[in-house]
Length: 356
Image (cartoon, rainbow, N blue to C red):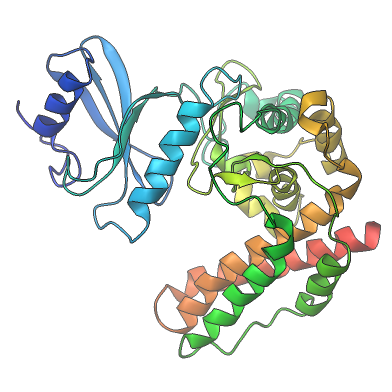
């Protein structure tokens, strides 16, 4: 089977892929319309057609990291479990968890998504219709509530993740991550004025009860594909951080990253954030709450805590790039930009606290 010229065989060997697809009972024939796709920064996406069916192949980068294959196995398992749930997400057609099949990489085939990423481009009619953009924001919340409604045990994910003690370990886990950056030569330590206050508030105000469920783990506008024909979310994408935890942290993450005019947060949402017209954060919570099976057993009155935790966690993650930039391991411009966003996230956290 000839290798398409536009793709490195070290990434996708189409001879191996074709033989594997044949064994899986998928339609045969030549590979057509092969094209690398834009997507997440961590993994490779390749679209193609075969036997009259369209596919997207997802695998790790050319130089696999230590956990890449395990992350892909987890992704495929969660996406397969969500099939039939009503959650807008790509559907897994077939998965290859065996890294010995293709150049050491786990991969899976999923359905293509017809939609656009509003953090990259904003087509018409969305670009010129503020009511459409307002509805896009509300649909971000209702798509998330569909995920929050999933019974993870009934979906076969009862042994996925470690939900026990999930909330209790968050502040310590991410404080330790921040402390670890001190091992990078040249990093002077975190210059985050609100760090101690936010950390203490989170420890003192942690919810005492919560209900586990499926978490996306990185839920914000850049990880949503929107329909070309309306404001609906076509698919939630980039499931690298999925786990079983507290789904209200996904909602908190959406609030923490929600674009506000003149704030660093708008940078995370690209053209949609710049265009404005999105609903205020309180309307997102109300839209999420409309789905009773998503909020049953979950305390939405504590949503400020989850939003503050999301600011804390994401700020520390982004500070890691700043630390690596100080050590000469990442571009200085990128490190400075992300440090600015970190400071903005901690300012937002203190604003959430002050308003609570």
